[in-house]
Length: 143
Figure 1 (cartoon, one colour):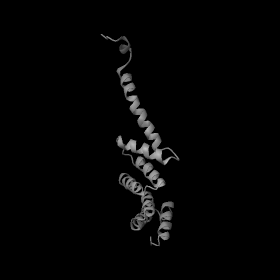
Figure 2: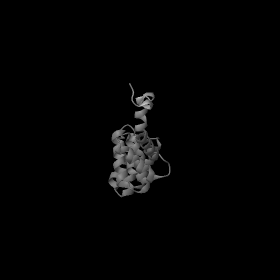
Figure 3: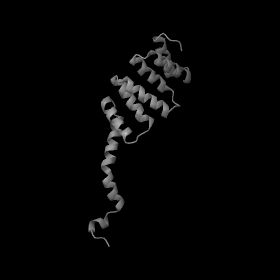
Figure 4: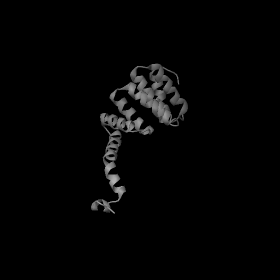
């Protein structure tokens, strides 16, 4: 027998959903901020929040890495691109992006190594390979 009449009519699942809703809503907001266009600060905040809550998808790290790169936070971008490469090793275009972060940070040797990897692992006619070859040429390095 139910002692609280209103509780007798509301399924327990609905009650639990209402209790969990604020957490879900905040997580959804963080996820939306992570992918927001044109606001690197919001990307960084949102992606960091998602990661802190256990998000491990390479796309989250990629969004944050790109935001760090746009803000000139190259060490952070390099760390996130390294994580992206570890989580999605099949897409070798991330080496070119990490190479760009290394280049902008002034770490020429690391940039050249990543550009060479991008050239070696991508089809020769791909835009990634062509871009990496152009960067190697600009750094006076051979592919």
